[in-house]
Length: 291
Image (cartoon, rainbow, N blue to C red; front, top):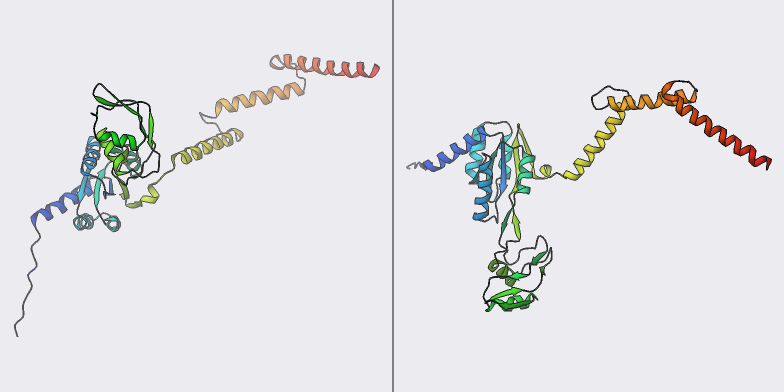
């Protein structure tokens, strides 16, 4: 009976190089993020990569198994927890931003792309009045179908008035997508969705990265006001509280002097005004009783 041994296929050099490159980047940058690139077109990805490169950051489209191996071999604490997010189509981002700054960066730097049939309008799409620079032809039927008032002038189609051609939330039809493409209007904004990020030995999920900035601003503002009031009432001497503490002390001392009728320079005018007001009130009461 013969025994056959299976030879393990050698790992291709390009895979080894990819793993080493990713491992080196993981060790170099303080923040590593996994982003979903499903449905993100190559031109959009190119623009996002360029914006990151301007900051000195790197985006690499990765093969999931090679990325998982690089994470494992990096030896960084807890970083292997990122591996579970390496499903589907992904890119790895290596950045000096913290994960929350990275999320805000992507939110602020979305890329406009052409609309496709089936897309959902992200906002109202309005066709502005003026020259479309399109020659008359079959395209006029699309304008007519979308109820866009037009006229032919100087050999091109003109839109007579600003016209709403799709409301926010509506599905973009094939005809509308074709028209928008011919007019070079890109109404769909696309950005990367960060699935998870690793920094300072911690993996942060997409849900934890979603911040309501207005809510945080309101909370911080309220906390600042309450802490300032507490410090003033406790007479805690800080650069921010000393002007308020001195003003409060001055007002309270003047009030005390006024109620005690102390003849001091600062309170004398107030004491006389109070005396005049009291005397006038007594005079009017006596006058009313005597008829």
